[in-house]
Amino acid sequence: MKRIVTAAILIPLVLLLILGAPYWLQVLCAACVGELALHEYLVLADASGTQSPRVLVLVCGAALFAIVYWMPGFLWSALGIAALLLLGICTLRSPVFRVLADTSYSFFGLVYVIYPLTLALLLLSQENGAALLLFLFVTVWAGDITALYVGRAWGQRKMAPVLSPKKTWEGAAGSMAGSVFFGLCLVGLGDLLFQHGYILLLYPRPWWYWMLLAIILNFAAQIGDLLESALKRGADVKDSGTLLPGHGGMLDRIDALLIALPVLWYVLLLQQTYLF
Image 1: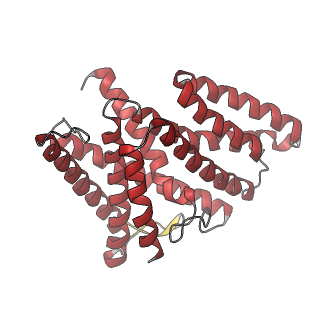
Image 2: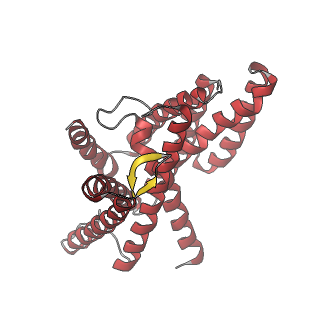
C-alpha cells in the first residue's frame, strides 16, 4: 500500500513537470533528485571501503546542472574538469593507497547519477522532447509495475539470485510485455490527440518503431535495476535509503532510468546522424 500511495502522488507530479513546467523548474527538480540520489550513492560507495569527498562531489553535481541550464555545450568539458578536480582533492586528503579508489568512486557517481539526468534536460530542450521523455517514463514505469505483479504471480526461475533474489525470468518477460503494451497505448493516445488538434504528444513514426524502442528501453531499464542491486549488495544494504515509503531511496526509484536515459539519447543521436 505504501508503494501504491507513493506512486500515486509522484506520477502525476512528474507528468505535470514534464508536460507543463517551465524549463528552469524542470532543471531545479532534476537537480534536487540528482543530488539526493548522488548522496545515497556516496553512502553506498563509502560502505564499500572508500571515503569520498562528499561535499565536493555534491557541489560538482550541482555545477553540472547549472552548466546544462546556462551552457549545455560545455557539459563534457565540465565532466573532465570535475575528474581532475576530484583527483587533486583526493590526492591531498586521502591516504596514498586510497587516492585512486576515492577519486574513481567519486567521479563515477557523477557519471552514473548526474550525467543521465542532464541528458533528460537536454532532451526536454529538443523539439518534441517532452513526448519522447514521457514515452521513456511510461515504458520504464509500466515495465517495473508489470514485472512486480507477474513475478509474484508466476515467477519461478531466478534471473540473478546473487544480485536480486526476487527477480525472475517470468517477471522480466512480463516487464517487456508491459513496456511494449503501454508504450504503444501512449503512441495511440498521441495520434488520437493529434487528430483533434493537440500536438503535445506527437509520435510521428510507425508503430513498429515505437515497439522496437520500447523493447530497447525496457532492456536498458532492467539492466539498470540489476546494476544498482550490485552496488547495494557490495555495500550490504537492502535499499539505498528510506526517503520514498515503499520504494526505498531516491536511487532505488531512478536506477532503471539512469541507464535507459543515455540509451534513449544515443539512439536518437544515431537516428539523427544516419537519418534512419
